[in-house]
Length: 198
Image 1 (cartoon, rainbow, N blue to C red):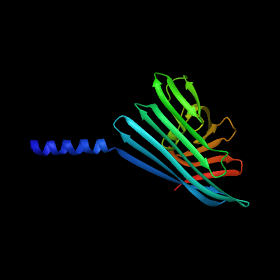
Image 2 (cartoon, helix red, strand yellow):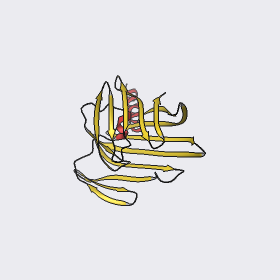
Image 3 (cartoon, one colour):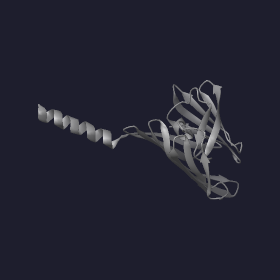
Image 4 (cartoon, rainbow, N blue to C red):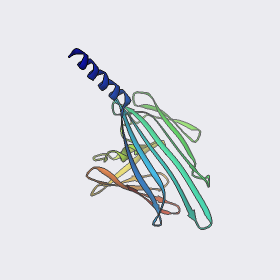
C-alpha cells in the first residue's frame, strides 16, 4: 500500500512538472484565400504560464510576394507578466519589429523596442495581447502589447467583440463565442486580414 501511494505521488509530480499544454490553430485569410496560419500555445507549469503566438503568412499583392513571420511570447508568474518578447519580420522590411519587456521590480519593467530602451512604471502587467487567444478580456479596458511595448486601449464592442486600438491606427477586432476566441480581424495597409479558428 505504501509503495503504491509512493508510486502514485511520484507519477503525479512528474506530470505536474512536465506541465500542461494547449494548442489553438487559426487560418489566416486575405481576399478569401488562406495565406498562412497562427499557432497559439499555452503551457502551465506550477504557478507559471507561458503564452506563445506564432504566425507565418505568404501573400501575393500585385507583382510582389510578401512573407511575414511573427512571434509573441510571454511568461507570467502568479498572474503577473515576468517577461515578454515579440518580433515581426517582413520580406518588404519596413514592418520589422524586435521588442522585449522584463519585470525588474514591483510595478516596474524595462522594455526595448527596435533598439530603444525605456522604463514602464504604470503598474504590474496582468493582461497582454497574447492572453487574448486564451481568455476573453471581460471587464478589461487596457492591455499590454509586447509588439508595441506599451499599454493599449481595449474597447468592448458588445456581443463578445473587442477592439485593440494601436498607436499607428492598425486596430484589431477579436471575436469570442462562449469565452473562446473564434476570429481576429486586423487592418493592414493592403486590406483586412482575418484569422479564423480551425
